[in-house]
Image (cartoon, rainbow, N blue to C red; front, side, top):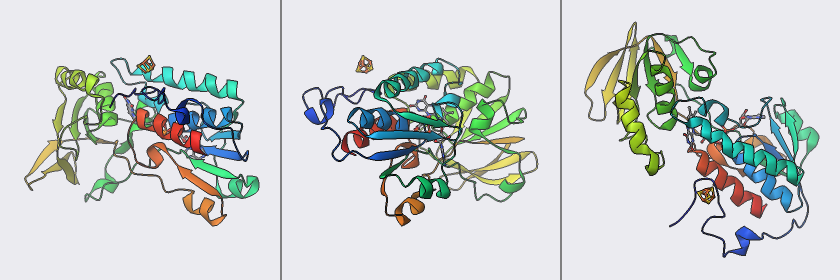
Length: 288
Ligand SMILES: Cc1cc2nc3c(=O)[nH]c(=O)nc-3n(C[C@H](O)[C@H](O)[C@H](O)COP(=O)(O)OP(=O)(O)OC[C@H]3O[C@@H](n4cnc5c(N)ncnc54)[C@H](O)[C@@H]3O)c2cc1C
Ligand code: SF4
C-alpha cells in the first residue's frame, strides 16, 4: 500500500478518521512521557482535538533519540526536519513542554493525569555473553554525543540502522569497525529506497558485517562471534558499542496501579524506526 515515512495522512486523504478526527470528548489532561518523534506526533494531534497535553522529557531539548541519530554521516541530519515540524505543530496546538523533567512514580501520583502516553524510547540491554560485564562497553547514544571513550578496534553490537549509523560515524574517525548482529541482513529496517546506499557506504568505509551472528564470549582484546549454525571465531576488539534495543517496561506498572488510562507508543512499545514512532503517535493522537 502507498504510504509516507513521516506523513500518516498520506494515502488516507479520503478517510475522515485521519483528516478530521472528532473533537476531544471528554477533554482529558494527558501526560506524554518522552519528547521524541512518537511523543511529539501524539501531542499535537491530541491537542488539536482539544485535549490539554503536557509533554515531559528528561532531556533539555526535544527530539529524543533523533538528536543522536542525526549525527551519523551521509545526510542523517535530515531526520531533524521531522522534529522541527512536529515542534512547530505542537506550539501552534498549545502543547505544554516540561523539559529537563524526568517522569517518576512520584510525579505521576502527584499530577494524576487522565491519560499517560509512554513514549520513552527503548532500553539498551546487556549481552549474556561471558566477559561482557568486564569489557569496555559503551552505549550508542553516548558515542554519538561524544561522551564515550572508544578505542581503535570497535565491535558494534546490533546490525540494524542504529548500528550502521554509529559504525559509519566511527569509521569516519579512522577506527576499524565490525558489525555483529542477529538480523539475517544488515539494515533490514532501513527504508528500501535508501538501504542500497548504506550497503555501499559500509563497503566504502571498510566495515565488515557479521549477520545472523551474536557475541558469544568476550576475552581480553577480542570477542568470539558465534554464527547461527554454531561456528565460533575471534575478532579483535577493545570497545563494544551497544545498539541492540528492547521495549521499555518502565512506568507501565505505576500507571496501571493508579488506574490511569495507558498507551505505549514508538520504540518503548517495539524498537523500530522514526516512521513507526510517528505513525504510532498519530494513531493514538486521533483516538485518545
Ligand atoms: C544511532 C541511531 C540511528 C538511527 N537512525 C535512524 C534512521 O536513519 N531512520 C529512522 O527512521 N530511525 C533511526 N533510528 C531510530 C529512531 O531514532 C527511533 O526509532 C525513534 O527515535 C523512536 O522514537 P520514540 O519517540 O519512540 O523514542 P525516542 O526518540 O527514543 O525518545 C524517547 C524520549 O523519552 C525520554 N524519556 C525516557 N524516559 C523518560 C522519563 N522517565 N521521563 C521523561 N523523559 C523520558 C528520553 O529522554 C527521550 O528523549 C536511529 C536510532 C539510533 C540510536
Ligand atoms: S512528507 Fe514528503 S513524501 Fe511524505 S507525503 Fe509529504 S510531500 Fe509526500
